[in-house]
Amino acid sequence: MSIKIFVNPSPALADLISTGEVSIDGVEVTPFHSPRQVEAMRRAYPGLPFQFHASNTFRTFWSEYQLQRYHVICRESRWISIHLAIAPAWVVLPALKFGIKLRVPSPDKLVKRLIVKIQRLKKKAAIPVILENMPASAVLDNHCETDPRLIQEVINMTSCQMLLDLAHARVAANFHDMQIQEYIEALPLSEVRQLHISGVREKEGNLIDAHETLQAIDYDLLAWVLPRTKPEVVTLEYFLDDKIALREMLSRVRQVIDSVSN
Image 1: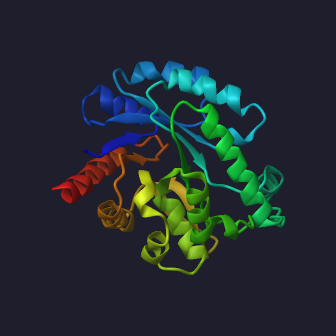
Image 2: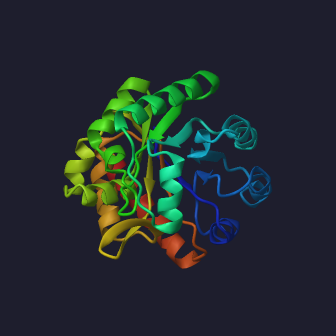
Image 3: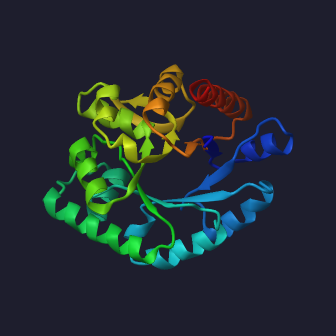
């Protein structure tokens, strides 16, 4: 099975596709766009399948209704991808919005809660559920949810496959003072169904998933990971409106995939 390349929607991507400058296999959308916006977007990408990446959407009280709306619009979605995140919203929101670091309570209880939610979602979903590894954060005490042992435990307990986000892995490996290859090899690579790639940057001495342009280390890491996994899709997570950068990245990602496939 050939690996498909998906990209997040942007004016730059729409222009490149309309002029025939790039060729991709699909578009991946997130809750940052409303269902109505996603529906309107489809006209800019005629004939391309839309995959919905639910991220943290499933954790809210209105999640079932929201997921149903997205999946009616993104009817080609072959799975529901959600964050393997145990930190509760009352810890995450103050940290991300105001830089207030609160202690994550009892990881064991939070893991059990997450597993129950995932199992409930799996019973109600008509398509498989896959789980995405999280990045670590200096302002969010979430080192436990980026521990490869916890990720392995949740994957095993839920019988889910995995979305391996390479940028998240780089950030987490740096946080745990591990080599990136060592960190990734500790993850359940046999369960990887999809990869996310995006540009990491340093901020105040810490790595963050900035969703910037890819650098040499990112292409090298992708080339290293592909033979160790069997992803159906590689998604370039890039939201900026830069046609030149996007065209270059898609060309190089295609080259990496082709070099590994041959």
